[in-house]
Amino acid sequence: MNPAPAPEPPASGSSRLARLRPWLPAALAAALALAYLPSLGGGFLNYDDDWLVEHNHTLRDPSPSALLAAWTDFTPGTRLTLGAEYLPLRDTLVWLELRLFGPHAPPMRVTSLFLFLAAALLVRRYLLRTFGDGIAAEAAAWLFALHPVHAESVAWLAGQKDLVALLFVAAALVSYAGNSRRRALLVPSLVALACLGKAVAVVTPLLLLAHDLLVRRKPSARVLVPSFAVALAAAAVHGWVGHVVGMVAEPLGGSRLAAFVSMGPATWDCLARCLVPTGLSVLHDAPVRSAADLLGWLAVANFVALGAVAALRWRAGDRRPAVFLAWFLIPLAPTAQFLVPLQNAVADRYLLLAVLGPVAAIGAALAWLASRDRPRLALACAVALCASFALSTFERAAVFHDSVALFRDATARTAVDPLAPYQLGKALQAAGDPQGAERAFLLAFSRPGSRDVRCSAANNLAVLLSGKTRLGDGIAFLRHAVTVCPDNPKTHNGLAELLARAGFAAEARAAYDDLVRRFPDYEVGLRNYERRYGSPPQGPDEKKLR
Image 1: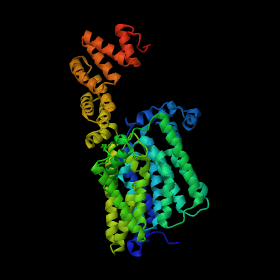
Image 2: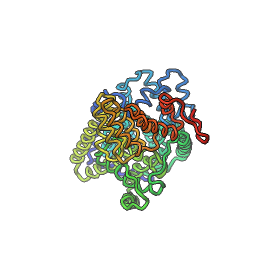
Image 3: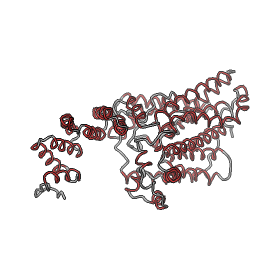
Image 4: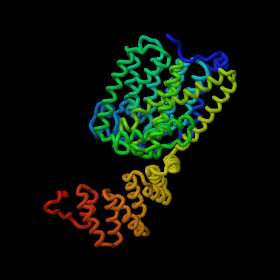
């Protein structure tokens, strides 16, 4: 059997690293603490933190029945309350945090940092077992830990599911990379725990297989067969729950082929952000492309070219490029829109595991540089890259301190998606800045993205414009908004209410009649109609309104 890949020569700087190695875990912990310091005192964000953690009535219930529901209740109501997913391990963690800390965000943010630190140290241990104790493994481990793409998972409490999954995936990799007889039980158990933390962990067995290919080791059927069985069972459960709660969306572009083409440039951008971490954002514009889009196919061709280069290197005896590419693409598979259409096409948190491939490639490049009698230059480059990543993480962590900062940043980084300015408007409104909120809602309404979000922005803006001195502005805005949101009952109700308050009796009555005719199940509209005009009319062929 051939040895592990590309052991580094003594000239690579391993002797210098060996002297520092006992101190490196503590140094990495200190670096992470400093990098995430701006986020640790922050509060709950208005992006899932509020309903999923802070005000979640299931997880705030101190009784054991709440935990039992998280693990055993598959009804749509409970699943939707818990994030429209089956992640009982994450739910258990949040339940325990609420028992220990109450609904206070700072200690929960510190918990997230400790989870990530533990996971990062396990990733480092795995890389050291795989590549030896030279600069390749250390650089890759530090770059992975300090990469700013992780800020979304570490500094966002709703992202704790990422950290739970990463912790157990890393533990599974460490265990599988060893030779213990207990692997046959331990690794499948760790895979199961990872899948109970986040659904994307179902790809873990493929990463285990990639490890065997990298180190030229015969795959262990005793470990891999039960691991794949566990992952397939978890995938079936996650898929069923997603179907029950309606989380599976339509494919981008209306077909799987169009989604495949659309994801080509999006995945290429993900690779670029892993190598040069700029343009990070909690929300991204994801252009939808047709199946005949040339730019989309060009991006696909780029990955085919990378695969061809990796195949050539494989034939030459170097398996690292192929495995590094696999480490990048395999973790992205569960979020690929042509496989499983999801509500979010692109997100920084999707790179949680995928970033391992690019940073491992950087580590290998630094090791090559060291082997060319440039160990000091390689070490200097590694330190400079780590410092750059740490600074970027520090900046991203500050963005996640509060909702206004987060969505002001996301609004500046997007041009199509209206969700960023909509969330910014809600944050500014909660912070007591109605003028800023009004501008943000108007921007969200003017963007060409999701019509549902635009309509929500219109309804929030209408509330801000409903004062006595702004009725005219509110009516003028809602007259236009109902043409953009013809199927949104709240928008129609808002226009009818403002017309009635402004004294346009005939037009208000007509708007209310149209509201109850078009939306006979909209309870708010029915109550407002009854308050002003009595029982709504019921024609012989109309649906009963009461």
